[in-house]
Length: 269
Length: 255
Image 1 (cartoon, rainbow over the protein chains, first blue to last red):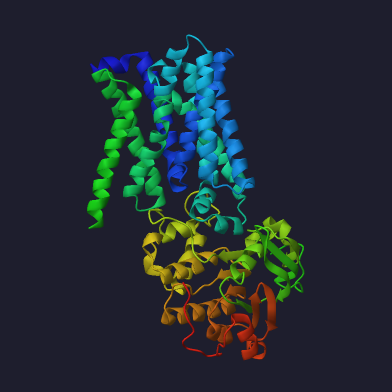
Image 2 (image 1 turned 180 degrees about the horizontal axis):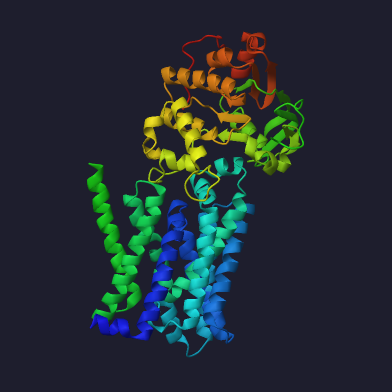
C-alpha cells in the first residue's frame, strides 16, 4: 500500500517538499535552540495568521502575504530589540498577541474562508504545488549559502555576543539576516505542519540533537537526521493510518526527543 | 597590521572619556595612555567601572563624551582594528548544553567556512601546548573548570595573532595557586608574542609583580604610573575606603 502511495505524484511532491523543509528547519533549528529563539519563532509563526488573513481578504496569494508579514515583523522586532531597553520577552509578549488579535478580527471580516484558514493552522502538505517546491528549493539554497558563509560568526554570536562584537563581527546585521531567513523558513513551513506546529519542527529536532551532540558538527548532523526521520516516517504513518500529516510528524519528532533524553540521561551516569 | 597608524602611536589613547548608563555617571573624564608592548593593569574596588571601561574602549557600550584611539585609529572605526585586538570577557554567556569542543572553539577563528587550514591547526596545537590544554582538544567547553576555561580562552584569543589583548579579571574564580600560573603564563606570552596587555585585576600583589603600569579607577582615574611608585597606602585607602596593605595576603576574594 505504501508503494502505491509513493507512486502518486501528489505524495511525491509532498515528500520532496517535506524533505527540503525538514532539512531547512533542522539547520535553522540549531540556531533557534542555541540562541534561545523558540519564543521568537512561535511569535512569528502565529502572527503569520494575520498576514494570511490579510492576503485572503485582499484576494492576494495568502502564502506570499504571510511570508511578507512574517519578514516585516522580524525586522520590527530586531529593531525594537536594538533600540529599546525592553527585554526580548516583553517585546514578543506585546507584539505576538497584538498580531494574533488583529489576525482573528481579519478572519472574522472574511466570510466563508474559515476552512482555508484551518489548512494554514494545521498544515496540509498533501496539497503542495510545483510552485511551492520551487519556492522551498530557492529558500533552501539561500539558507544553505547563508549558513555556510555565516555559520561560524553565528556560532560565535550565540556563544557570547560581546566576544563576537569585540572580534569585529557585525552582530546586528547577522542577527537581522538570521531572523529574516528564520521568518521566511517559518512562513514556508506553515504549509508543511501549520502555524500551530511550526515551532515544534524548528525546536524539537535541534533539541533532540543537543541531547546527544558531542560537538557542533554532530549537532547539525543529528538535527538533520532527527528531522528527516520525523518528516518521512510521519508522512508515511499519516497516510497509512489516515491521520493528519502535520501532527503525526510532530509526534514522531517528540518520540525521538524522548528517546534522546533517555539516552543522554543514561550517558550522564 | 593596522593601516593608518604609525609605530609611535600608543596602543590605546583615551581622552576625556565619560560613560553614563541609565543617566548615572559611571566613568568621569578619564584620560590615559596604554603604551605598546607592555602590561597595564586597571585596579579598583567593586563597582569602580573597570569592566565598563574595557567595554567602552571596545565600543561594546556607548560613551557619553571623549575619544578613544586604538593604534592611532578612532574606535568609531572599530572594524579596521578588530583583527589586531582580542578580548576575553569575565565570563562567557553560554549554557552548559552548548555543544562546542575546545577544537571547535578554535575553529571559529578559522578563515575557512568549515574546519581549519593545516597552518591554523598547527598554531592551535602550539597554543594549546603553551597554555597546557593540549589534551583537552576534544573536551566540551562546558565541562572545563574556571581555570581551564581561562587557559583555553587565552589560547583562543591568540589564534589570530593579536597585538593588543584585553582581559577582564583573568583570575576570577581561580584559586591562588592557579592564579599565579595564569599570570606567569600571561607574562611569558606577552614577551614571546610582543603583545600589549590591558587587564582588569583586583589582586594588588599580582599587579605589583606583573604590570609595568597601573591605573587606579574608582569612577575617576585616581592614579596612573609604575605600581611601586604610585600605589601608596594613602591612595589605596582613598580608593578602597579602608586601609589595605600592599602585601595583604588576606586580601579578600570577591564573588
